[in-house]
Image (cartoon, rainbow, N blue to C red; front, top):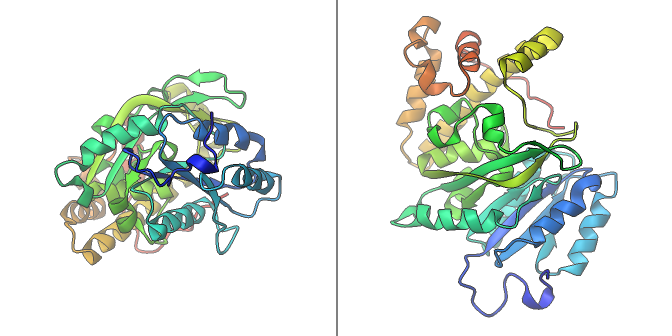
Amino acid sequence: MFATSTDSWYMTTPSPEPPIDILLATYNGARYLRPQIESLLAQDYGAFRILASDDGSTDGTQAILDEYARRFPGRFELTPPPQPRQGALRNFEHLMATCFVQGQARWFAFADQDDVWLPNRLSLCAARMQVLESGGGADLPCLVHTDLCVVDAAQRMVHPSLVRYEGFDPAAATRESILSVNQVTGCTVLGNRRLLELALPMPQAAIMHDWWCAVVAGSGRRAFIPVATVHYRQHGANHIGARNRSVLARARRVLFDGVGVWQRVHRLGAQTWHQALALQQRLRERRLEDDYVTEYLRWRAAPRFAQLAGYRRYYAGPELDRLSRWFLWRAWSTEPTPASDR
């Protein structure tokens, strides 16, 4: 039974569960939005509120959000962005800022409009967050994330594990390797208030909201749970989706879109360089240790063959990916052309 206005997340009777804000960013997502909202409301963790922000949809998305806000006052709240059509990153930034300013939630979770959460998504992450915040961890930026189950548009299983599907190992990722390769999937993230404080405002160089939060959490604590808590829906219109990274799949992409592959790799190299520069500046502004970022930037700026001894430390993933980054990436002195956020 879903919560009503009489048992909303901020009920006057104290709850033993720390309150969580689920940050739901939408844009023209009416086709899959209802199942996602229903899965959010069906969480087995009681102390949560859904904060939803629509980025100027032209389909039925806004009407669906309005309906749920009427049905679940207090549990489901709308917070329109001050300037619509700014893209997913800025829409999530608006939700993060609203969550931080209102100050009601101890933790926050990102939610995409087209996935489906399993009932234990919040409770599993909350239990691990409690561990991260113990022993003074609440004063550090803390982030928990999980594996996902890859499904198609009809929720038929494509692969039970995104991690195995893409050939990554988030458990072994380091704060150094995440500067180059993001292994934190936003729709599984649970972050604490200190992470919000350090991540806001997002710099212009932030690549995506989840990646920026992941690199900021490098100055604190991060934990990966190797359990799928989200059905990660792939439907052909995903802004960022799962990619088969097998040798055969890569060969097909190079064969049919070689120029596009080269351009994407080159652009990502520039973006990671500038995002790391922005992180270094943020840490220095807050008087936090930035030596590992400085060392990374120094390594990126070194001659290519001088990087050979460290490329496996900084470039995670399949060996072909690591070598292509080593060969194509360098230090950039100018800002990269921003990628479209739609």
